Amino acid sequence: MGITGAPGAGKSTLTDAVVATLRAGGESVGVLAVDPTSPFSGGAILGDRVRMQDHATDPGVFIRSMATRGHLGGLALATPQAVRVLDAAGTPWVLVETVGVGQVEVEVAAATDTTVVVLNPGWGDAVQANKAGLMEIADVFVVNKADRPGAADTERDVLQMLGAGPGRDWRPPVVRAVATTGDGVDAVWAAVRAHRAHLEADDRLAARRRARLHAELRTIARARLTARLDDRVAGPAGRAVLARLDARELDPYAATALLLGEGDT
Image 1 (cartoon, rainbow, N blue to C red):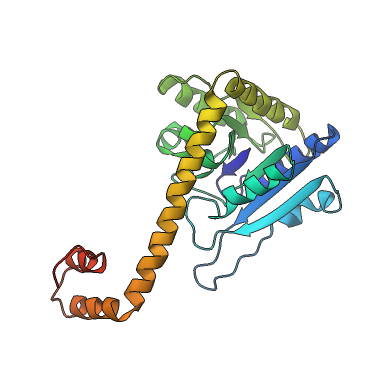
Image 2 (cartoon, helix red, strand yellow):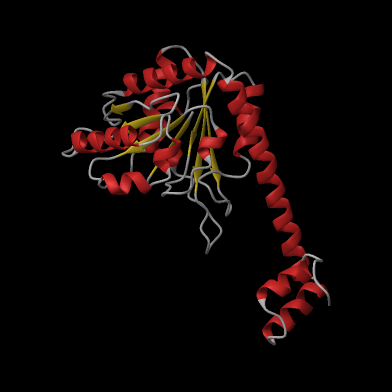
């Protein structure tokens, strides 16, 4: 289960509340909380665990913070592998909380079976909703902080957007919740279970997981190719190409072709 949304939407608090719901039912759970890495210092606060102190000593809960280390998309490159490790260890439920994302950082949808998008009252109008990439990857919408003014307007905007969009075999439910008090969290979990039942009713779950493996292969391949390119740029041949680029003997396209071995020297 992926939990994503804009910064400050209450993802960590909602994750904590869902963990409490699972533990009340006797289920063990793993939590992977992804934090952004600073582009300046290279460090990460890894502070999401601070909001989950109620479960820190619970042997049925495993919480791991992960830094993005510059990886885009809202997740760390190693997140899918960490999910596999938890699955191999027999963890029945794994919650993946992304960094605070915007309109296009939607990698969580390819990494999880069910994606929960957390919204807040006052998040924007229906036009903003229709252009946001997050709206296209949600399996469940949660209007968190629903005790604040504007919750009904946010729910209405999302429902209008869903009604105007293309037909889907699953219509994402919109659930109101107040994660700080636990209100509505049972309804959130019921919506997640309903989506899981929908996936298991056909080959959809297996197909989604196959697509996830294929996407992970491409992601790993891109990361390794990027690392090789960085090494090549830092080497003698790369420095020679950069010198010619600086001297305006080459444009960036021709320089790239040389670095990739596609151009004439």
